[in-house]
Length: 283
Image (tube, rainbow, N blue to C red; front, side):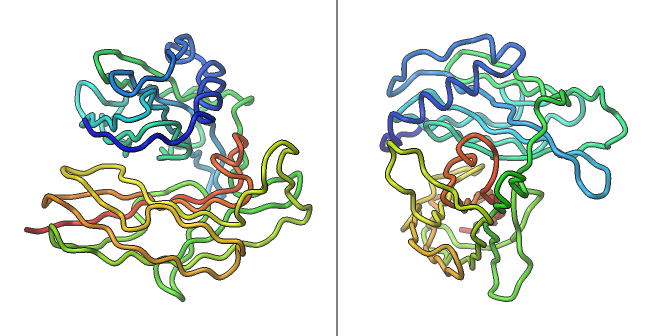
């Protein structure tokens, strides 16, 4: 178990709405009042969408009800999916607050009755959430039909492959040495929507682009020199930072680019991009 600084009280309301709207056991359990330590972690099913090849992508995140405690739950009897492999790319490290679009599962498109369940036990409490293909849970993470907005693009080389929308597989492989800073650099681009996205009247305008680094999995601590970077211009940015790993082993990092719609596209799942980076750390 680990502790980090609070991420802010507004997350609680967003997470509560998401969890109460979810079907199944996790949706039936109302999160307690936020505490610093000892609260459970709730898996969150966020919707599904069809891919051009006919397959279907399921999208999930989580809500850690602690304001300070980072919860580690390795894949196994306390963190597994079924049917199929217990390990389907879900996180094993859960930072405080609500995390949107953390991982995806791709399934064949010909089984509209498919149902996968994520079981998670943290701080002695078990929650489960079913992934399903209810038409009411269709999302549009790659383009907002209402205003033409699209997610930012992340590249790991200036002219390299671009990644947009939810994370699919491992986008980048890297190596590092424990205790030595690893340089992390991305190149981002973003196109303004056809119709301007306006913030709610009661809120200040968000930065045009926010880039954040998270730990999805890993045996040790990871310190980012700049875990969050904000930009007033959304196009052609080159955010750089470093990550230092305390222990050797395999880590999965998640880099996230948000446009003005904010976390989870303000709950509508567009428009943001997330990509997974695997780092093999030696002694």
